[in-house]
Image 1 (tube, one colour):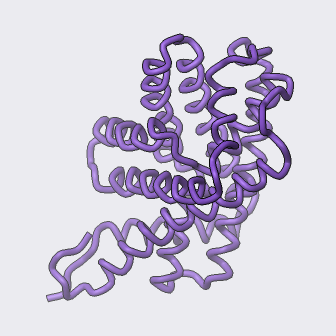
Image 2: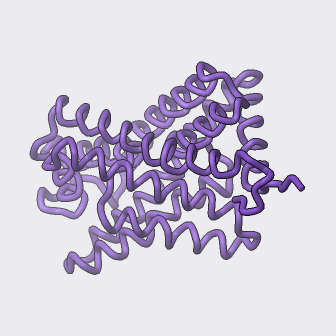
Length: 264
């Protein structure tokens, strides 16, 4: 007897809504993508703010990692559009033939573009607030960003893979959990893994780079156009492999044959 994958049904329904929105109401889709950058920026701001407040690096790093997941929780609960989760959705959509590859790519790239626009604007505005205005040269945010430019291409790529494996595991897990409190704590605890380990997330970097630049008056060691571009490109590729292929494609394949009793 054919089985039913609840997880694939939820993914298919979300894909259909995303496609309908961008086709019929492009501006609303773009705004949901901007909102995702706003929510992730707020999660990043409180996470970095905690890191800035503690002189003990271990304590600051742990609190930073724990708080960062609030941004993703806001995105999931309020139905904003995040590029890194759409890497999973659009890969599933293509594999399951819910969308043509060109349409799936359009949704993903529009989302990433407006994530970038939103992140840049919000990062600039955050740099004008008391929490981030005129940061000293030696601070948590500066060290965090400078460390990204010290990584080689392979390290950036691999960390990008792991980061988006974790992000999309949090998204899938939130679909499986029924209780909102459980979903919230589940998201925060899973995201803690990638933030504490310092893995690379392209949309988060859209926020971190301009925020660090504006907050420090441009005094970031190693921050050049080439260094930023290299990080963004290889983080994006790594994130796509992790979220799109490792999680999206794998789970779409695992749940393709509904005669198999072990689904989801």
